[in-house]
Image (cartoon, rainbow, N blue to C red; front, side, top):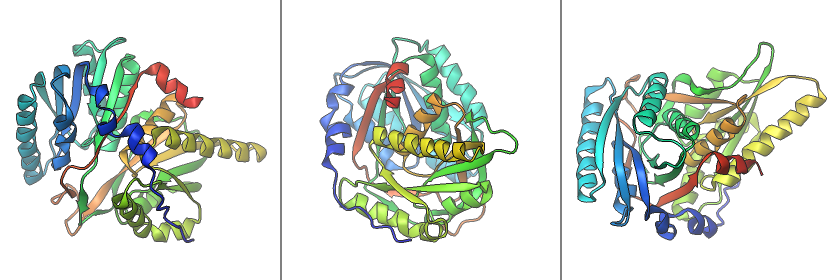
Length: 353
């Protein structure tokens, strides 16, 4: 199956979501700023855009503490730079919280503790930078903020470019602690799998999960030539699986509502198909695609608690050995920053309309 990459640029997305066109959303008071110290320069993207008019009560910086010493040291170097920027921009007092990157179950508890300790509830405002969070950890933060009934604004910064080697294969599949769904014995599984562009990782998740049916989703509506290249890379690196399954759909990589609607329509179509055959199934979403697609999947699962979210951790990174990783994926520079929201329980409910 040949997929034609849609090269028509979508400037509407820039107008609606780019921070450049939405800076007024940052000129307010936030009770809490949540971010993560990663090894990529773009971790600083959102902080650079915060103005003197922004007031932040407290900052929580999550620090991944992998078992591999040189990767941990790299994260510490990033933390020093991040704290320096926070001080330069006078962004409140901060707390650093170390987390085990292999344990999203414990992370869920930590998130809930932070929300309670900072008295985040209805009326509270939170700024969340998702740039450096692993997807399965991101699900737990979104779930925690949603449960608190606060209002949260999401920021995401892309790089100027990615640098190979890219990860390949998967080490293990993690079912999100907060979005485990409601699978039943003898039910068929339908997996909606968002394509990333790491060679073999998507096919690895597909093979390990072994669903009864799999639908692939690839990005469309690029906003510049760089995005066209990334979409083409995603297609080329997953071409074998695309051809094997012959069941690939297109959706946005940056328009959160469009992605949510795509998930809804895909799920509803399967409900109708399986209803006609009197066959029971459960719906699974595999999050290896862009971060905004994962936010949409998280919102959808919040509103449909029978939907399961799964994530595949990479087995190899370029030429390195099995996990823990010795050579993390790198990116160059700080690209465009996007803002989504603010969201609360009521606004997320409206995604269904």
